[in-house]
Length: 296
Image (tube, rainbow, N blue to C red):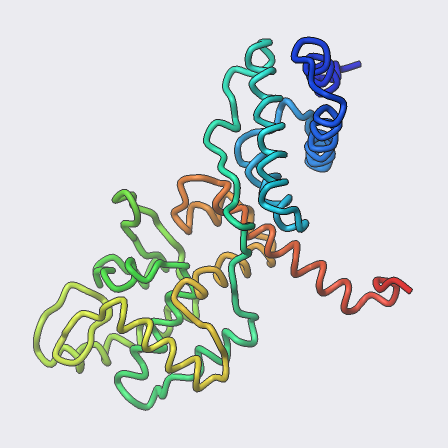
Protein backbone atom coordinates (compact mmCIF):
# COMPACT_ATOMS: atom_id res chain seq x y z
CA UNK A 1 0.00 0.00 0.00
CA UNK A 2 1.49 3.38 -1.02
CA UNK A 3 2.42 5.85 1.68
CA UNK A 4 -0.01 8.67 2.37
CA UNK A 5 2.43 11.55 1.97
CA UNK A 6 -0.19 14.22 2.54
CA UNK A 7 -1.05 12.64 5.89
CA UNK A 8 2.65 12.50 6.77
CA UNK A 9 3.03 16.18 5.91
CA UNK A 10 0.06 17.13 8.09
CA UNK A 11 1.59 15.16 10.95
CA UNK A 12 4.86 16.99 10.38
CA UNK A 13 3.04 20.34 10.59
CA UNK A 14 1.29 19.31 13.79
CA UNK A 15 4.23 17.69 15.59
CA UNK A 16 7.30 19.47 14.25
CA UNK A 17 5.87 22.90 13.41
CA UNK A 18 3.26 23.06 16.16
CA UNK A 19 0.53 24.54 13.94
CA UNK A 20 -2.69 25.53 15.63
CA UNK A 21 -5.82 23.44 15.17
CA UNK A 22 -7.40 26.05 12.86
CA UNK A 23 -4.28 26.41 10.69
CA UNK A 24 -3.93 22.65 10.47
CA UNK A 25 -7.57 22.35 9.39
CA UNK A 26 -6.99 24.91 6.61
CA UNK A 27 -4.00 22.90 5.36
CA UNK A 28 -6.03 19.70 5.54
CA UNK A 29 -8.86 21.24 3.50
CA UNK A 30 -6.56 22.67 0.81
CA UNK A 31 -4.55 19.45 0.47
CA UNK A 32 -7.79 17.46 0.25
CA UNK A 33 -8.54 19.50 -2.89
CA UNK A 34 -5.09 18.61 -4.21
CA UNK A 35 -5.70 14.93 -3.48
CA UNK A 36 -9.02 15.06 -5.34
CA UNK A 37 -7.35 16.69 -8.36
CA UNK A 38 -4.65 14.02 -8.36
CA UNK A 39 -7.22 11.23 -8.17
CA UNK A 40 -9.13 12.79 -11.08
CA UNK A 41 -5.90 12.71 -13.10
CA UNK A 42 -5.22 9.11 -12.04
CA UNK A 43 -1.99 10.10 -10.28
CA UNK A 44 -0.53 10.13 -6.81
CA UNK A 45 -0.27 13.71 -5.47
CA UNK A 46 3.53 13.63 -5.33
CA UNK A 47 3.68 12.71 -9.04
CA UNK A 48 1.83 15.78 -10.31
CA UNK A 49 3.87 18.08 -12.54
CA UNK A 50 3.95 21.83 -13.05
CA UNK A 51 1.29 21.83 -15.80
CA UNK A 52 -1.16 19.81 -13.69
CA UNK A 53 -0.52 21.94 -10.61
CA UNK A 54 -1.01 25.15 -12.61
CA UNK A 55 -4.29 23.74 -13.85
CA UNK A 56 -5.25 22.88 -10.26
CA UNK A 57 -4.56 26.44 -9.04
CA UNK A 58 -6.60 27.93 -11.90
CA UNK A 59 -9.47 25.57 -11.11
CA UNK A 60 -9.68 27.00 -7.60
CA UNK A 61 -10.37 30.45 -9.05
CA UNK A 62 -12.99 29.06 -11.42
CA UNK A 63 -14.74 27.40 -8.47
CA UNK A 64 -15.25 30.85 -7.00
CA UNK A 65 -12.58 30.90 -4.29
CA UNK A 66 -11.49 34.39 -3.34
CA UNK A 67 -7.95 35.39 -4.43
CA UNK A 68 -6.86 35.27 -0.77
CA UNK A 69 -8.16 31.69 -0.43
CA UNK A 70 -6.43 30.66 -3.67
CA UNK A 71 -3.21 32.16 -2.36
CA UNK A 72 -3.56 30.25 0.91
CA UNK A 73 -4.18 26.99 -0.97
CA UNK A 74 -1.15 27.58 -3.19
CA UNK A 75 0.93 28.23 -0.08
CA UNK A 76 -0.24 24.91 1.40
CA UNK A 77 0.59 23.04 -1.80
CA UNK A 78 4.00 24.70 -2.00
CA UNK A 79 4.75 23.69 1.57
CA UNK A 80 3.78 20.10 0.77
CA UNK A 81 6.14 19.89 -2.22
CA UNK A 82 9.00 21.48 -0.29
CA UNK A 83 8.46 18.81 2.35
CA UNK A 84 8.60 16.16 -0.37
CA UNK A 85 11.78 17.69 -1.78
CA UNK A 86 13.51 17.76 1.60
CA UNK A 87 12.39 14.20 2.29
CA UNK A 88 13.69 12.96 -1.05
CA UNK A 89 10.34 12.05 -2.62
CA UNK A 90 10.76 14.48 -5.54
CA UNK A 91 13.89 15.78 -7.27
CA UNK A 92 12.59 19.28 -7.99
CA UNK A 93 9.84 21.54 -6.68
CA UNK A 94 7.15 21.72 -9.43
CA UNK A 95 5.46 24.67 -7.70
CA UNK A 96 8.52 26.93 -7.82
CA UNK A 97 7.34 29.09 -10.74
CA UNK A 98 3.58 28.85 -10.25
CA UNK A 99 1.91 32.15 -9.46
CA UNK A 100 -1.54 32.83 -8.10
CA UNK A 101 -4.05 34.02 -10.73
CA UNK A 102 -4.55 37.74 -10.23
CA UNK A 103 -8.17 38.38 -9.33
CA UNK A 104 -9.18 35.02 -10.72
CA UNK A 105 -8.17 33.45 -14.04
CA UNK A 106 -10.50 34.52 -16.84
CA UNK A 107 -11.32 31.97 -19.49
CA UNK A 108 -10.50 33.22 -22.98
CA UNK A 109 -13.35 34.41 -25.19
CA UNK A 110 -13.93 32.46 -28.38
CA UNK A 111 -16.51 32.38 -31.16
CA UNK A 112 -18.97 29.60 -31.88
CA UNK A 113 -18.57 27.85 -35.22
CA UNK A 114 -21.70 29.61 -36.47
CA UNK A 115 -20.17 32.98 -35.54
CA UNK A 116 -16.96 32.03 -37.33
CA UNK A 117 -18.92 31.26 -40.50
CA UNK A 118 -20.74 34.59 -40.30
CA UNK A 119 -17.49 36.46 -39.74
CA UNK A 120 -15.76 34.76 -42.67
CA UNK A 121 -18.66 35.56 -44.98
CA UNK A 122 -18.73 39.24 -43.99
CA UNK A 123 -16.10 40.66 -46.44
CA UNK A 124 -17.37 41.65 -49.90
CA UNK A 125 -15.39 39.21 -52.03
CA UNK A 126 -16.43 40.92 -55.27
CA UNK A 127 -13.71 43.48 -54.40
CA UNK A 128 -9.93 43.05 -54.25
CA UNK A 129 -9.79 44.15 -50.63
CA UNK A 130 -12.65 41.83 -49.74
CA UNK A 131 -10.80 38.83 -51.15
CA UNK A 132 -7.75 39.85 -49.12
CA UNK A 133 -9.80 40.24 -45.94
CA UNK A 134 -11.55 36.90 -46.38
CA UNK A 135 -8.19 35.20 -46.97
CA UNK A 136 -6.68 36.96 -43.95
CA UNK A 137 -9.49 35.83 -41.64
CA UNK A 138 -9.49 32.30 -43.08
CA UNK A 139 -5.76 31.95 -42.49
CA UNK A 140 -5.88 33.35 -38.96
CA UNK A 141 -8.66 30.95 -37.99
CA UNK A 142 -6.99 28.03 -39.81
CA UNK A 143 -3.60 28.46 -38.10
CA UNK A 144 -4.07 30.40 -34.84
CA UNK A 145 -1.42 32.95 -35.82
CA UNK A 146 -0.91 35.95 -33.57
CA UNK A 147 -1.71 39.28 -35.23
CA UNK A 148 1.99 40.24 -35.09
CA UNK A 149 2.84 36.99 -36.87
CA UNK A 150 0.26 37.32 -39.63
CA UNK A 151 1.18 40.91 -40.58
CA UNK A 152 4.87 39.99 -40.88
CA UNK A 153 4.32 36.61 -42.55
CA UNK A 154 6.43 36.45 -45.73
CA UNK A 155 4.58 35.27 -48.82
CA UNK A 156 7.36 32.72 -49.38
CA UNK A 157 6.61 31.06 -46.03
CA UNK A 158 3.26 29.75 -47.26
CA UNK A 159 3.35 26.53 -49.28
CA UNK A 160 -0.13 25.94 -50.69
CA UNK A 161 0.99 22.80 -52.52
CA UNK A 162 2.04 21.12 -49.27
CA UNK A 163 -0.65 22.86 -47.22
CA UNK A 164 1.71 24.28 -44.58
CA UNK A 165 3.14 27.60 -43.51
CA UNK A 166 6.31 28.40 -41.62
CA UNK A 167 6.13 31.02 -38.92
CA UNK A 168 8.68 32.63 -36.62
CA UNK A 169 6.97 33.46 -33.34
CA UNK A 170 8.10 34.59 -29.90
CA UNK A 171 11.76 33.98 -29.22
CA UNK A 172 12.37 33.57 -32.99
CA UNK A 173 11.20 29.97 -32.73
CA UNK A 174 10.05 28.53 -36.03
CA UNK A 175 6.95 26.39 -36.17
CA UNK A 176 5.31 24.50 -39.01
CA UNK A 177 1.52 24.79 -39.11
CA UNK A 178 -0.88 22.90 -41.40
CA UNK A 179 -3.38 24.89 -43.48
CA UNK A 180 -6.88 23.53 -44.17
CA UNK A 181 -8.51 23.23 -47.57
CA UNK A 182 -10.75 26.26 -47.14
CA UNK A 183 -7.83 28.58 -46.34
CA UNK A 184 -5.80 27.11 -49.21
CA UNK A 185 -8.59 27.79 -51.70
CA UNK A 186 -8.75 31.44 -50.57
CA UNK A 187 -4.96 31.79 -50.67
CA UNK A 188 -5.04 30.66 -54.31
CA UNK A 189 -7.77 33.17 -55.06
CA UNK A 190 -5.84 35.90 -53.24
CA UNK A 191 -2.81 35.50 -55.52
CA UNK A 192 -4.50 37.54 -58.27
CA UNK A 193 -5.91 40.07 -55.78
CA UNK A 194 -2.45 40.55 -54.26
CA UNK A 195 -0.97 41.35 -57.66
CA UNK A 196 -3.62 44.04 -58.12
CA UNK A 197 -2.84 45.51 -54.68
CA UNK A 198 0.90 45.46 -55.40
CA UNK A 199 0.33 47.44 -58.64
CA UNK A 200 3.65 46.32 -60.10
CA UNK A 201 5.59 46.75 -56.86
CA UNK A 202 7.18 44.10 -54.67
CA UNK A 203 6.63 43.35 -50.99
CA UNK A 204 7.83 40.45 -48.86
CA UNK A 205 4.69 40.35 -46.70
CA UNK A 206 1.84 38.09 -47.75
CA UNK A 207 -0.89 40.55 -46.79
CA UNK A 208 -0.64 44.02 -48.29
CA UNK A 209 -2.74 47.10 -48.80
CA UNK A 210 -3.00 49.56 -51.67
CA UNK A 211 0.30 49.98 -53.62
CA UNK A 212 1.81 47.09 -51.68
CA UNK A 213 1.85 48.77 -48.28
CA UNK A 214 2.15 46.15 -45.52
CA UNK A 215 -0.83 45.77 -43.21
CA UNK A 216 -0.27 46.81 -39.61
CA UNK A 217 -1.68 45.25 -36.46
CA UNK A 218 -4.02 48.22 -36.19
CA UNK A 219 -5.24 47.58 -39.75
CA UNK A 220 -6.11 43.98 -38.90
CA UNK A 221 -7.95 45.03 -35.73
CA UNK A 222 -9.97 47.55 -37.74
CA UNK A 223 -10.76 45.07 -40.54
CA UNK A 224 -11.94 42.49 -38.01
CA UNK A 225 -14.04 45.05 -36.16
CA UNK A 226 -15.77 46.12 -39.38
CA UNK A 227 -16.44 42.52 -40.44
CA UNK A 228 -17.72 41.62 -36.96
CA UNK A 229 -20.12 44.57 -36.92
CA UNK A 230 -21.44 43.49 -40.32
CA UNK A 231 -21.86 39.92 -39.01
CA UNK A 232 -23.57 41.14 -35.83
CA UNK A 233 -20.89 39.80 -33.46
CA UNK A 234 -19.46 41.73 -30.51
CA UNK A 235 -15.95 41.70 -29.10
CA UNK A 236 -14.02 40.17 -31.99
CA UNK A 237 -10.25 40.71 -31.88
CA UNK A 238 -7.31 38.90 -33.50
CA UNK A 239 -6.74 37.04 -30.24
CA UNK A 240 -10.37 35.89 -30.17
CA UNK A 241 -9.73 34.19 -33.53
CA UNK A 242 -6.64 32.54 -32.03
CA UNK A 243 -8.67 31.39 -29.01
CA UNK A 244 -11.36 30.04 -31.35
CA UNK A 245 -8.78 28.09 -33.37
CA UNK A 246 -7.45 26.35 -30.25
CA UNK A 247 -10.84 25.74 -28.63
CA UNK A 248 -12.41 24.24 -31.76
CA UNK A 249 -9.44 21.92 -32.29
CA UNK A 250 -9.74 20.57 -28.75
CA UNK A 251 -13.53 20.28 -29.05
CA UNK A 252 -13.04 18.05 -32.07
CA UNK A 253 -10.53 15.75 -30.39
CA UNK A 254 -7.08 17.30 -30.96
CA UNK A 255 -4.51 16.52 -28.27
CA UNK A 256 -3.14 19.34 -26.16
CA UNK A 257 0.50 18.78 -27.17
CA UNK A 258 -0.33 19.23 -30.87
CA UNK A 259 -2.31 22.40 -30.16
CA UNK A 260 0.60 23.66 -28.05
CA UNK A 261 2.99 23.15 -30.98
CA UNK A 262 0.69 24.96 -33.42
CA UNK A 263 0.13 27.89 -31.06
CA UNK A 264 3.83 28.18 -30.28
CA UNK A 265 3.39 27.99 -26.50
CA UNK A 266 6.60 27.17 -24.64
CA UNK A 267 4.66 25.89 -21.61
CA UNK A 268 1.91 23.28 -21.86
CA UNK A 269 0.14 24.93 -18.92
CA UNK A 270 -0.57 27.96 -21.13
CA UNK A 271 -2.33 25.74 -23.67
CA UNK A 272 -4.28 23.85 -21.01
CA UNK A 273 -6.45 26.91 -20.33
CA UNK A 274 -8.31 25.85 -23.49
CA UNK A 275 -9.14 22.49 -21.94
CA UNK A 276 -10.92 24.48 -19.21
CA UNK A 277 -12.85 26.34 -21.90
CA UNK A 278 -14.04 23.10 -23.49
CA UNK A 279 -14.91 21.65 -20.08
CA UNK A 280 -16.98 24.73 -19.25
CA UNK A 281 -18.72 24.53 -22.61
CA UNK A 282 -19.51 20.83 -22.22
CA UNK A 283 -20.98 21.55 -18.79
CA UNK A 284 -23.15 24.40 -20.11
CA UNK A 285 -24.41 22.21 -22.97
CA UNK A 286 -25.19 19.42 -20.51
CA UNK A 287 -27.03 21.70 -18.11
CA UNK A 288 -29.00 23.24 -20.95
CA UNK A 289 -30.07 20.05 -22.67
CA UNK A 290 -30.05 17.15 -20.21
CA UNK A 291 -33.56 16.65 -18.76
CA UNK A 292 -32.21 15.79 -15.31
CA UNK A 293 -29.43 18.38 -15.16
CA UNK A 294 -31.37 21.07 -13.30
CA UNK A 295 -32.03 20.64 -9.62
CA UNK A 296 -35.63 20.63 -8.46
